[in-house]
Length: 146
Image (cartoon, rainbow, N blue to C red; front, side, top):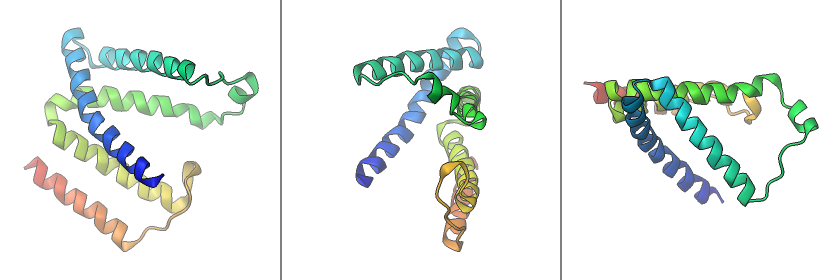
């Protein structure tokens, strides 16, 4: 099962580059990165509704909606911020630098989240090899940006 997860993560990562390019085309047509992000989320919402319907997944009931911790609703906000920011910054930075910076931000946040076991992740201590991996990415970003 881990192999499937790894392959899916790689494919979704590659899809982020495609998504930024598609959203940039929307932004050029609409003259607005936030409008492009909104269309992205509208299309995604319809796709997810269809996916739930095809899989015959039940809609969450009232008690499930009420059981969601208040902080968990911010996931959608972060998704919207990412899409809008990538749509705006993509043409200015290029795909490689944009995604390298995005991954760097994810790695720094991930080290903190893992170290303290935040947001439901299991606790994993910061190690020298993990910090070295992040340092290598920072060096790569420097080389990419030159």
